Length: 80
View 1 (cartoon, helix red, strand yellow):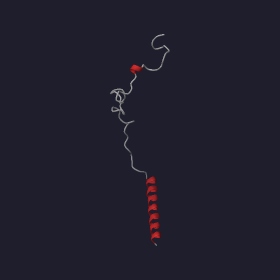
View 2 (cartoon, rainbow, N blue to C red; view 1 turned 180 degrees about the vertical axis):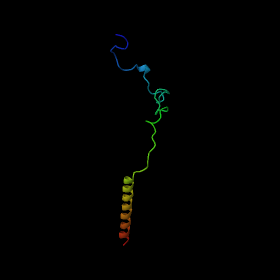
View 3 (cartoon, rainbow, N blue to C red; view 1 turned 60 degrees about the horizontal axis):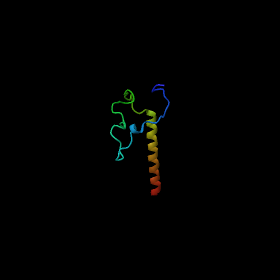
């Protein structure tokens, strides 16, 4: 068989395998960069068409007002 079809040891050659340097670090060029510096975003940029919808904003404000009223009433009752 040729070089591409032979069966053999799948492990890499130990002399050509990257590893830690003498001081415990890794030689420059043995590891890829932490992130891609040439890629853009994950897709085309699409700006938001509008802000918060009325329903969720109303619910959030209502819950915040109810919490504030509860703590205000609690403070009044404790003060008596």
